[in-house]
Image (tube, rainbow, N blue to C red; front, side, top):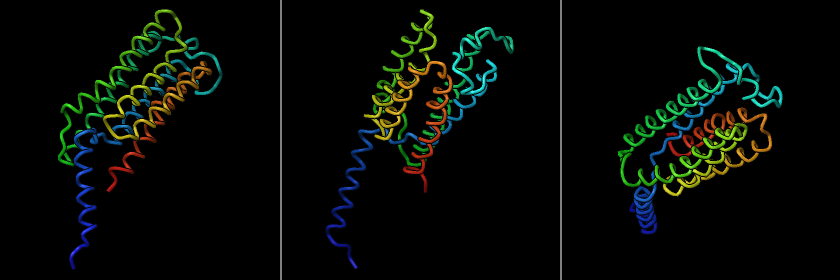
Length: 216
């Protein structure tokens, strides 16, 4: 029995839409990369709490005031946080590259092309701006605003980059901005909000994206 004409026509339109989407949006982004990045952030936050000797939500004393005199593992407070943040960043990037590359290969899609470059440029502009802004906060000793600022600029970067990938990334960015704004008025809990935004939220978003787009 032959299929009705309208079903063939609908399938053709769906195929055309899929081809157009692949040519204008980076759709190889894997949800598991978000899970991996979130786990890296949680590990980094757990080590940071241990380093400064503070329990999450234990009190509204600024975490950098609690731990600035700490000295563990041959590192002072600033050396530790630079190293901890760097390792979290490297781990998150490694997870993103690995899982996204695996997804692209599985679907027979390219990972590195002009569309990827556009995505990275639009992601990098707010991130680079935020990095300079946070450095200025550090130089002027306004350290309590650094954690909220990282969340806000990261959220802006995701919203900006969402034009070139799955639209769901925009909603993650908006939530990150919201958490960052909330953290601005709860400075004693900057590390806790950072853990929620970069850790728990990433894991939840990653699993959602995997379930929606990749689960077979």
